[in-house]
Figure 1 (tube, rainbow, N blue to C red):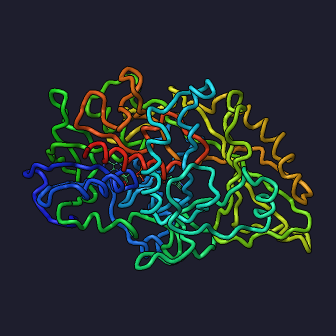
Figure 2: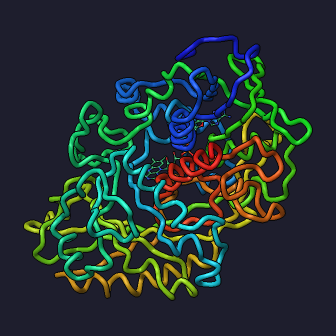
Figure 3: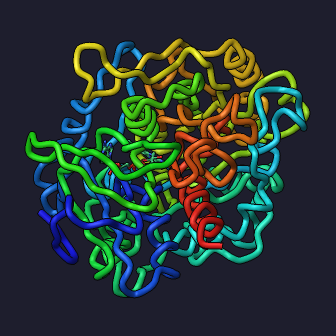
Length: 484
Ligand SMILES: Cc1cc2nc3c(=O)[nH]c(=O)nc-3n(C[C@H](O)[C@H](O)[C@H](O)COP(=O)(O)OP(=O)(O)OC[C@H]3O[C@@H](n4cnc5c(N)ncnc54)[C@H](O)[C@@H]3O)c2cc1C
């Protein structure tokens, strides 16, 4: 099925071919179309189909099942979740949109650990702001942990009562969580967040998705969107990308173009490049994400769950500082998804936390071409890094101390990590040195200069902050550089 101008995919030569319709591709396309001449032609190839919000409501978890078949997990004890559909992960994300902190980009030079990013916070700052406005993010404009040049487009959501106590106790460490779950209706687009805590499939289509806020890009007359078109490889010749080879309805097709842009996530981007014959020793390596531990804080005489959205607060008290020389950063989320205590009179005296821990990438965690089925990536996870244990030890010691500023009966930290954060990152890492990174700071392939690789696959490290706002900002940054 094609949207926009329909044409013979194989006959035409395109100005740009973009792979995927998730955040990475859509924010890039947004910036590209602003400057592209009226008769330009952009082909977008999306492996999944288009599933309207009403269909998703009627078929819960169907998209997750479709996507699970798109790769082979060699280490199933470590699940990875991606989506294969128009809009990619925007269909199921929770819409938490923190920025990274300036020091997150400079771990090696500031704290002597992991690696630095080849871009600095200041270079991305304006693009963060633009991405926040495109997603209608609700956040605390006057009280933010990030240096900001413009306010959030929407006011922050209301705190829970325990959040307000945390803010009083830690005025410089605790903030309202920025999120793309709007606190006010977005005229003509989305209703305000209904605050019922099932954000992976928002019942009223209020959180930002590509489908509800950026679908117009794909109706632009310069854009030809082809769905159910799985890109297999990039056609490489004499150090240039000539186009792509893709499969639709079991048949192989080709499209040629002047620029190829992969935005197919951290499992598919390296797989496509490996199948294209790219033999960079770092390609597919350093797959990683954060890990997290849940905690229950039993409150003494304070009721919870008055907040305005599903996750209301962000505690930075254990995040940045000289301790990062010894152990990774920890971000504390406060949740407003009710779970009740079972003691009479104390039902709501419970605060649920999720403590997200930074993890350094490991070269041995990787994506390869599956030997039994070359059309699918095989994913191998090499286990948690030892640095996580230092962070866990710090959390077990520090969290009760932090919470003791509130009226608290007990702090109970889970023994087991949450299975997954659903953030696949690394695998086509960015850097300045072509020997140790696949793409440059503007996400251009070091050797193939008309090939860009967008998305979380470029992340050399990942702080506890959720990654997608940074993915969107990087796409705007990469497009701006390309057009300049
Ligand atoms: C349950 C859940 C909750 C989440 N919550 C948050 C959150 O609150 N905050 C946050 O920051 N992040 C969150 N994430 C992560 C977020 O979804 C991802 O970071 C984000 O989707 C990555 O964007 P992307 O565009 O790089 O990739 P994707 O969104 O995965 O888009 C990739 C696109 O490429 C397509 N594609 C893949 N392979 C091919 C191919 N071979 N050919 C053609 N097309 C292809 C896919 O179908 C898809 O449309 C969550 C994820 C999950 C699963």
